[in-house]
Image (cartoon, rainbow, N blue to C red; front, side):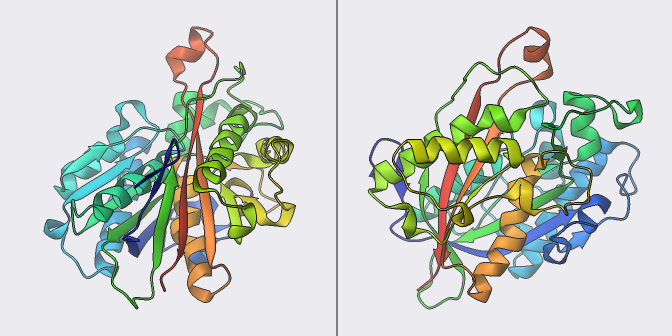
Length: 338
């Protein structure tokens, strides 16, 4: 059901019944290593290129989610997924392997919640019984495309962020009363916001206004107070962007508490890991949500969370042509089934 101008309410409360979360060696040394299902020991993952390794991250995450959900791939109606590489080839090639009807998505690092919103919409209106959704990124593949190859060894400014190597996939199914699974209750679809920033080493600063705009729209459309959620989590703003978004939201009149407002890009790595402002990448929010946050919800730490995945919609070509960075954020509300 449409609520307000840009939000959906999922009256049938689709369930997230299983997840698959994969990561790389850097994530294995991070804060949330125990919340990954599979961690690879090196960035190559037995492949001859980083892009092919990227595909493996998604394929393995899908297999893990299917195994946990006790389903075969033939039982899945649709896959909603994407990544950051040109023409989302790692995800498309993973879909080729899995042979699941496929919607390829690109929302940059907002792809995880774009996919979860669409999967929930389809399930809510009986468009399918079993849907997979997910997002992935690979540090070496993404850095090579958008910045510099890691072998180049260029120095990064304090505003830069570290692309997560990983994939997060969720199985979304119709609600069963009494089932002990997280459910999606609403989603707010963001607008493209461009405040004129053009520095690709300050993605968090560029994306912060989009995150604030979507969060403000969510509470306006659903006529809720921020206290409705135990936790409001942005995708990958990092320390710089997260502080900016916090200020923008509170200036709007919404009263957010600092402890209530967190960021996946800050949560995933340890303080002594050299990630400058924090983490980024399409896998950032996907791995943190489908691993750590949902695990914490199942433990009872949180009852309701709002995950706001943020994306910078630039390309290498747009940067070379001196374009500014258009950004977007999508939000999905999740709570435990009752």
